Image (cartoon, rainbow, N blue to C red; front, side, top):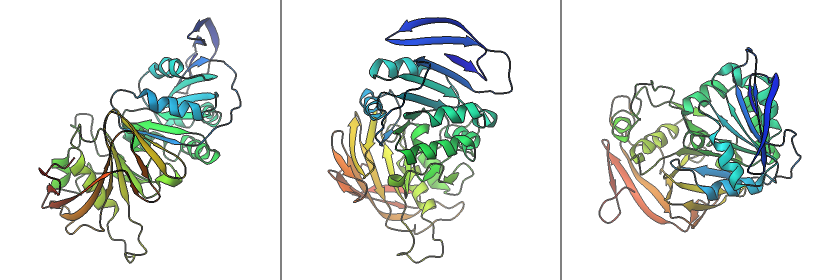
Length: 344
């Protein structure tokens, strides 16, 4: 079914892939969200199993969605996005046995404050945050009932996943892209390394409260878009000295995921890489040696654990079946300890 604001009347009803699809037109209302639903019109109580699917972007990965769906317990699955359409509904319905699949499009602050949207999230037994522009998620959803409902769902043990921009907002720290303009190219490593305080390097704290991702920032489309350098800048910024001693100051680390890859994380931190690319776990030794506005970054002896598909990593121990190497940044140039000097 499609709601724009509030539904006013049904127009037709047909079966599709074992689900029901109801489409409805609506009168003009103050609300700006759109709601599309496949399957049962009535929500179904479900026993959920918590877990977090971190997806790196690119083509969607069936294995990651199937994992999320199983944890949703056959209940009601919801997709959240700021723009786009309901293409995920038929995709997820074709993979999973669920009572319903719905997409909510929240294009502005008004939509995120609508009581219907908050209820829809609170009644979901599985949640997925789609790709797009994470600046919209931060600008529209942070400080709204959407943020509260998402964090309450995490506390209740509802499984949650995200891809691309949806992954970017899952960590405790978020590269929010709020300094970007529509005409700007992607924030690349060269630009970030040259000036770690450039206006486009915007970071926010604790949009979502996922305990096992505390102390983590994420990045996406990783090797494909050559984002190692910018990720090292993010790490330098979030690990800036804050007046505490090194033993008191928590060290922030990064999980960076390649396209068409995902990390499936249990609440206890045990995680498995799946898909068609690697997952990178990046650990700075402490504060950067040189971190100044308008000055290229210098930060040395950064540990990287690269985990291939079907291999495991324990987030609590920050160790696993990984290839380990080290990186250093000197005046904005990244070098590697790997044979051949590759940074990925």
